Length: 209
Ligand code: PRP
Image (cartoon, rainbow, N blue to C red; front, side):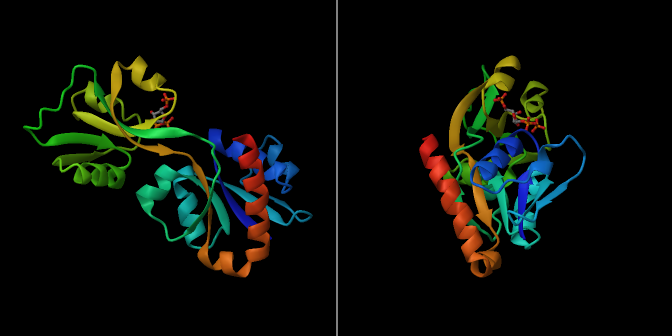
């Protein structure tokens, strides 16, 4: 059995569709239930729904052989795993955003609210800007509106959340998409199965381009 950690939520369904089209179906996963683990002996796969930011932990520690995680999560947590394939799904970007009338004149330490402290620090270190990090866990857009921070570093997908809160992108940091990742020792010992899944998914992803 190959253990596969899928990110629970919007992205997870699309990701499972791709595994299914690649020939690794597990029909029980489509039944409405609160179960978290699903397996299909015929195709030799066991899927489980994991909080997206936890996927790299399961894969790094070998509880999952394979998993799918956003590039944002991979960069933030830097897990010791192999990144096998860009699935081209869940495309969005990491960006700096602020109130429309905010201009950084560089005179004061910049207050940055984010769920991604490592990505934010690396970015500002790269441009030599001194910052104070404010780590939040969600609804990051509130921070500049309430004066908790000057800017945010966050994911922008459609841009609707920013627009509806009168914020705008001030700088793009990097593009994000979902990646197939593998546990390092599984990659050695289950190389045939993992190689097959990766190849099949690569064909589908390339055909979609
Ligand atoms: C993410 C992100 C933005 C929003 C961007 O939040 O943090 O708030 O999506 O999407 P949009 O550009 O399409 O509006 P998420 O839904 O993951 O919830 P969170 O606020 O709890 O982080």
